[in-house]
Image (cartoon, rainbow, N blue to C red; front, side, top):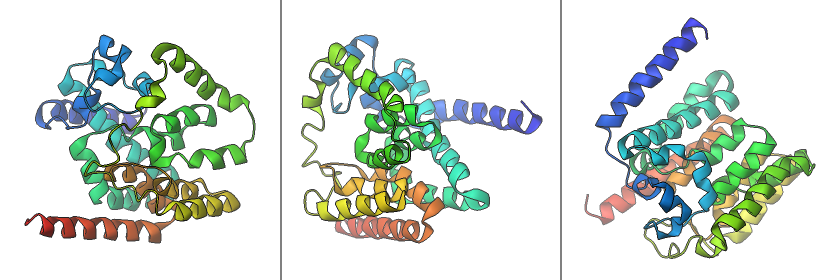
Length: 266
């Protein structure tokens, strides 16, 4: 490890230590903080409605809730930064700043959900990307189609297939619990089913252009529920490769916040 990387590592450790005791526990992290027994029966946890195998990448959920909260918050910010660095070129810091000042990223930091998982699929090889996208498919799931088009081999799909088979044996028919009761919650931003044609069109354009980011843009229009913070990963990808669309998403996000704030009398 060179001196610069060592300084960054120490800074990350100090920041993590500070966040552990200073930053409040995210309201969504309380859903994921669990014990081994709860992970075996995840749908007894209040508000847990996602795939149970998500816990395979959440070992920090078993730690003290303050420490786990800090680690998860660090991952939410760090993955956005890494995606910006990988895809943004020399202007990666602009993509990072645009994303972190968006209402979607601020909402993610406040809730501290696990939306670092889907964009992390853009940092790894296909064999690891498919399971990561499947852990929260309502965020960037359609990007998997372009991944497969670019590399149409079955071998990279085997980890995902194995994960699903094992999950059926461990948790049974877990898919019957997915998104239960989320269709009418106030934070659900999915325009389902009215904008399905837009989603299909974006996936089609992404397929023709071999652009997994455009295809990922179609995902929110094709799923029955997603929260605003789930757009943070998509926003950083747009800020790197399709900046004009990222500006529009940033502006529309803040416009929505202002409108809702006025309705609430803020």
